[in-house]
Image (cartoon, rainbow, N blue to C red; front, side, top):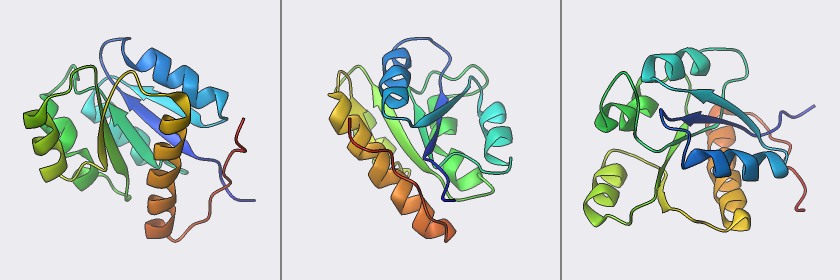
Length: 138
């Protein structure tokens, strides 16, 4: 059986990712949470690691720049999506230059979030040489 999409929510504050978590779970996308980059790397080293990391860049053990480097430190390919409540061109540029898959500004319609996570997860599944079971559209 193909695994379901799995995401890692990396954040120190409950907001803004609480609504993101609820939206993903409505679409049967698995979520796990980490509050530090060290914790995130541990999650990524487990069997069946997440395909996508979503971070609001408030991480308790490091700077937001360290969170951007997470994919390069991960033992498996993973896509990073930066989630912000502020449209900031400088942050967007930095995130994209550091290899983020996408920089999004909230609020974002649930259907767009689902589509983005599916694209990011499909990209990783292809890079890992695995298949995915995509949740049906609600």
